Length: 184
Ligand SMILES: C[S@@+](CC[C@H](N)C(=O)[O-])C[C@H]1O[C@@H](n2cnc3c(N)ncnc32)[C@H](O)[C@@H]1O
Image (cartoon, rainbow, N blue to C red; front, side, top):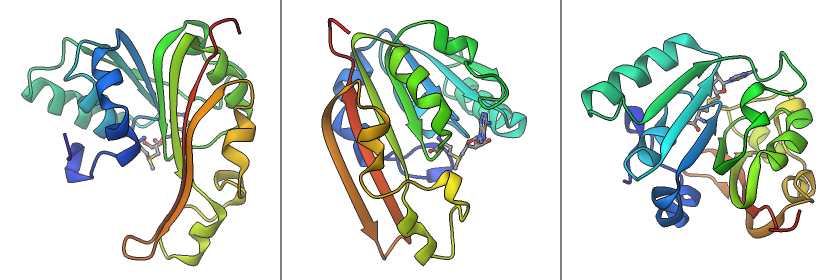
């Protein structure tokens, strides 16, 4: 499970929680892109829903899932997470919600509420330190402030949080695992 689609590695954060993800029933991967995590999650028991606005990415993911005979477990939705204040998929509750390399702050409250009690959120995206590198987003709307990620999900119980800079990979990332507390 160390490689995702296009040979982009699955995140270490995903690997840390892979046991729980593979045992989950319903997983939502927001801004799934080419689906490195959707595909990895669909190797378990879960039905996985991957959402992205980029049809080309979704087509690639669909054909890859079909090739791996996983298309019956992976449902793809083409939609714009920023078009509505609350996306319809966030009106349901999920065992696990994955958000990797995507940030739209107004969604965070809805994402927290879209977890079933005890459900797990894995969120990993770029911090402002990313501007040191030539790759990745430059717009501050898409870059996290230091320590911001757990604050965006303050209604959840944070289990794991780190901010890392990898000069080898040219990546500055914040990674959070947080859980909806059972009585919330
Ligand atoms: C850097 S890629 C990350 C893909 C994947 N999560 C991963 O980590 O491999 C960002 C993805 O966000 C998607 N995206 C950007 N804005 C979006 C929006 N408003 N609604 C849905 N998807 C969006 C892009 O199409 C792209 O696939």
